[in-house]
Image 1 (tube, helix red, strand yellow):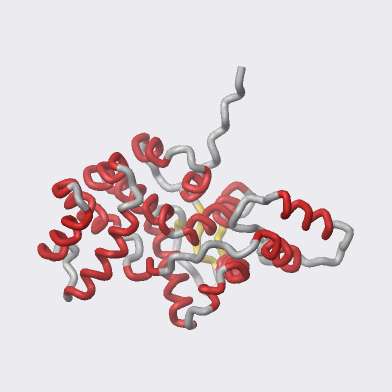
Image 2 (spheres, rainbow, N blue to C red):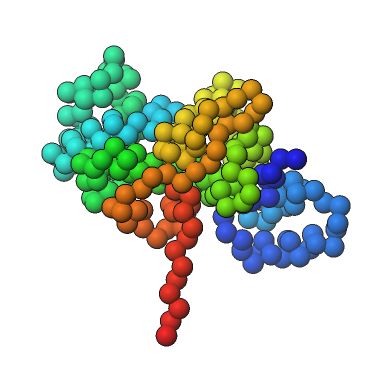
Length: 252
């Protein structure tokens, strides 16, 4: 049985969700998939996924190059011009440089000054963490994958990620994201392989895939105190690093 049945929504349950669940409870023969689809209708259409990330992957070292260049200019337009003029990303063509720079810059523009500084000046682990943080801020698909699948597996009794887990996740996501279904077969494979590659590089997945369908073991990445502090309190971003939400202090 697939341990990830598509019963998880990309948004927190609302009053409407609970009404739907209460209505479905007297019907004992409903499968998890049917319940999920009913919940999806209650929530409505989700925001469209950003799928341009296949142009770059994680690329922490190149992201750091852009962050350092931005430290020189203090202006994103000037940063772009300088990166392309210097061929700082070391691509073979200007067209490739433009695609790569655009994807990485659009992520980095979502980081604050402290996060950009750690990306530019930190250790290799810090660069990985901040590059992954930028991915999480821009690519909602990675947030939902880590929050709804990987974190559940890590906190459960089976941290082994299987191909069937990923298939279940993507099939569930397609119910609310027709842009995933609209992709060609080759583009779907590219999206999935790029996501897996980023998970491995970011330190969330250990081990190689094998022919039996095992993709690796889910694990928390190595984080310095500085990186951990800069992730902040956002529960989705914390889940992206497989961290639990911070507990709120009780009022006295």
